Image (cartoon, rainbow, N blue to C red; front, side, top):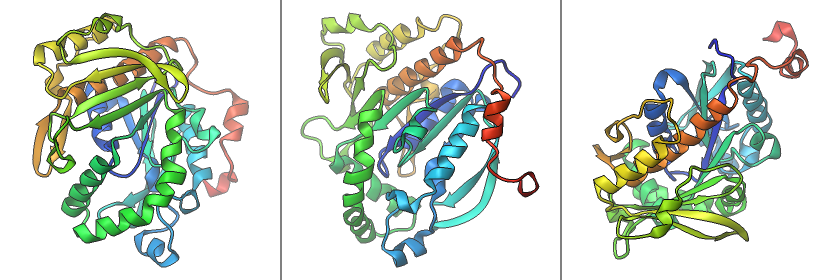
Length: 329
């Protein structure tokens, strides 16, 4: 990549089956596949599926992951340096040949433990936590793991029970470090396993990064999209609420409001993103599309902000990025 900018890095953290891959996929469509590098920190497991079962450890525990290597690789990516990334095959639970990864203009990093240390957190320009209600996440995990990862329903339920302690101790606490918390949830009266494209979205917008001016939404009304002032974990925040059944014209109004803050960029039609896979069927969700667009806004705004920042790190930084003797590289 030959630019005068360092990569812009987005971190997405959430529990297993929280929707990280779905959210990332739409962002790639908005930004352009040729401009985005995607990295999953769940590839950095120390043990494969069989070894974890034998050792009695879950993939959510930091001791099951090469945390120090994740930190090193995030630093290299931040400075535009390539990495040789481990690869974990989720279809069969094995570790396979590593992949050579070159950062492009945008780097999206998702996984279970991406905000678990101060070193990791410092390299992200935008941090997002996905926190759907637990009953909805369980329904998503059962559906995904039984259709795509070869598990039975009973095996998934047993794994969820086994992971609960580590989820509570290591995954959910990372929520407090996010700039934006995204929660998709079913409308009242809809069971999690029956939830489809009409899921509502609640975005907690923290003042740790500047958000687009959406104050016109404070007027409320019947648009299906609302901005509310409130507090989260004791801090003042904005809550952006998007109803699952929001009309297309009202969704388009919010899209236009976000695009107005990016006058130098050509808008992407919503049909190009906001999609998710429901078993074998691809479906579209306005709340998902608007969430992806808002995140893209933050990445593009940051990209514009650092237009004059040199891409390459100083020599001193480069020396710190080479922990191995030259002959071993």
